[in-house]
Image 1 (cartoon, helix red, strand yellow):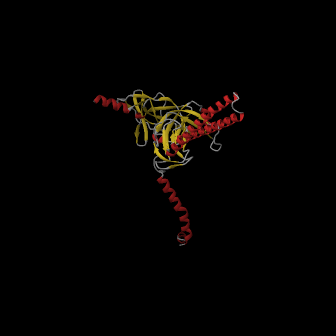
Image 2 (cartoon, one colour):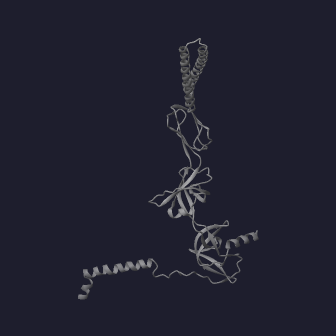
Length: 373
């Protein structure tokens, strides 16, 4: 009775709850994780050797040298960007360009209302003609007074007066000529010309808008470049004029470019230096796009086999290895996939050695299909 009373006591039940239940939880977790099941073999699985009756070409495991690069993030920016602004306040009467349009230096971009400016030019030209006529008349009179003075017919005061009149008309003519040039220059401001050969990024006005002095009307760039931030440890691998790869993922574009400039001052926090890269620009490349500059690294040696030689059995990657005329199926550990000589190959990390021969099943299938046809 005393033993039964001990087994049913609250204290005994608490001990059971504290000890037995956690033990059951641990055993259940171990069962779920496969502690009580047979382990998968960690060594490469070798199938029983089979006679090489399969008509499959054999390919050798190759050791190849693959160039390596590190992608440095950058953005597409114009090499030269010109903001074309208005010099006068006039109404826009014609817009001859749109975003994305290519233009030549000196090509008309926008025209402003020049009615008042042309009238002003005509007035200054008329004033110039009148002052020129007055100057010629005063010059003639001055010459006549000089002859009369030399002949003692005219007095010195009359000559001085004629000379003063000539100098006045000369000053008036110079002022009128300057006014004509200013009016012509102001009239030229009504026709907005492209300062460079390039492509229009954007226009800021439409017909009917009032242009104000200093207002940006059109923005033009000549060509694009990629400005990338390169790690300090990689700067020594680059030099100006060096060919370099560029990728723009948004367009699926890979191209060759040239390092145009390595900025000598870097970011002391990020430990990077800006590098500028230029090249032939794809028509769809736009300012601000994300790009990658591929900085060359030391080449890497890799063991590779054709991807078509790999046989997938469940989650295992396997190959058929030639052993003295017989094929042995063996598990391998694979790495990344590459394209060499226009063919997909895969890196072998473990399971094969250089010179081993494996069966190329895809090539065998192609040969059998060709023979059947």
